[in-house]
Length: 147
Ligand code: FES
Image (tube, rainbow, N blue to C red; front, top):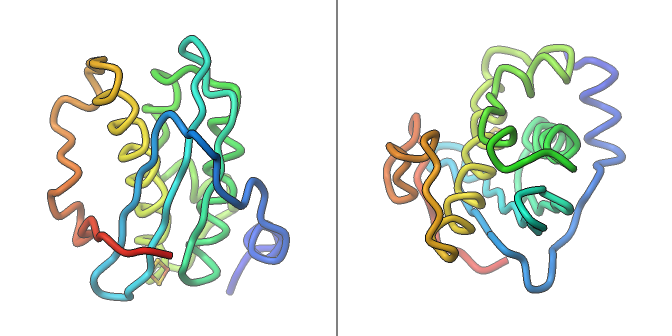
């Protein structure tokens, strides 16, 4: 049911944790399954020089956030904004249909972190112009919960 890559990133997730004094923090949750994901980014110039995550959720959500952090590490903010949940799924070698929303959560958490960074620095990215962190993203509500 799960690829080896999913199992690997679930058992040994990369870039777990928090970044103190992060330049952007994004937190999203899925109201249906109750899973919550938080992504921290550190930006230098326009390069994402560090990214960490904390996911309180299912194995697929943990694996999805783990590969998402790998995919954007060292990239520019613009490049990171192009990350789609499909790329996350492809990188994992696939996810069962009922678990696709877990990859959407990773994409949205990253966007929320960049949105936070952009808001704090008065930066405007084309890819974020319709992004509303308080909107219901594909049934994903932003939640305000302390870990
Ligand atoms: Fe909801 Fe995985 S079951 S994030």
